[in-house]
Amino acid sequence: MGKVTGKDLEKLIESLFGDSNIVVKEDVPPSVLPDMETKSMELKLPKFALSDEWGNPDSEDRETIRLFTGNIEGDTIGDKITNINNFVSDCDEACVDGKQVSDILSNLIILDSLSSLISDYNPLTGGFLMESFLSGLLGGKSRQIKADKGKIEDIYAYKGKPLSVKFLVSDTDIKGSARLINNYIEQNNEPITYLLIQKQREEKVTIGLKFYTFTVGNDEVVGDFNASQMPLEQDSVIPVATEIATLDFGTKEQLKAIANKYVDRLGERVLVIFDELDKLTTNINKYLVGGDKSAGSKASSNAETLKAKINQEI
Image (cartoon, rainbow, N blue to C red; front, side, top):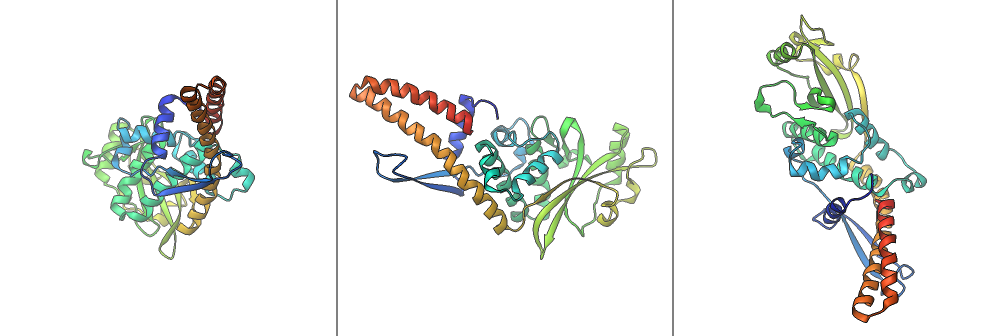
C-alpha cells in the first residue's frame, strides 16, 4: 500500500469503528500509558455484506471494498487467490510479524466474505455471488454480467477477458447453453473460457477450493471441448483443464485459528497508532487549555510521529 491519504485514512477509521462481528480486544498496559488507569480498547474489524454491487465497478460498495482488495497482490484471479492462500497457509511468528497491517486487514476481510459465501447461501445464490466476489476481488474495470443479458459469459475479468464461471461440488455437471456458446463464438471468433471453481469437501463440509480454466468451442472454432458435448462431467474436464489456483482454508475452526493468529498481531500494531494518537490529543489539550507552550512543541512532534507510524504500519 502506498502513502495513506486523508480520504483513505478516513474510510479506514470509519470501517474500524463501524458495525462488525469480528472484534479484537487489547488491554492497554500501564507501561504504555503510565499516567492513566489501565483500560480496555476494543478494535472492530469491518464486515461487508457481499452483494451484486461488488460486481459493479461504479458502485459505492465496490469503491469501499477496493481499499482492501487493492492490497492483495496479483492482476489475475489465479494470482489473487494464490496470495490469499499464502496468507492462510501455515505462517510462523516471524512471518506474521513481517506482514503489513493493510495486508492482514485486507486478507481477513476477504476471507470472512468468502467464508460467508461458501457456508451461508444455497448453490444458486452462491454461484451468482461468486461472480460478484471475483469481480470485486479483481477490481479495475472487471464487472459482472447480469443473467438477463442473454450471454454465456458471467464476468469480464482481467484485461476485459470474458469468463463463464461455475462454482460447483465435484459431482455436478458443468452446464451451458450451446446456443449462447455459439453466439459468443460467432461474435468473438474465439472459444469461450470457463472458470471452474470446484469445492473440495470432507463429510459434506467445504474445506477448500480449486480453480481451473478450460475452453469450449464448436466445429469452426476449436476449444478444449465442443459446445455439442455440453453438459460436461467434471471427471472428463479436470485432466484437460489448467489449474490456476488452490485455496486450502480447512474447517471453520481451523480458519478461525488462523485468523486469530493474525488478529492478535493486528491489535498489537494498531495499538501503537492509538498510543501515539493519545499522546497527541493529551499535549494539544495541555497547550490549548493549560497554556503549556512546551506541550505545543510536543504535540507537533507527536503529529509527525503519528503520521510516520500510520504510513509504516498501515
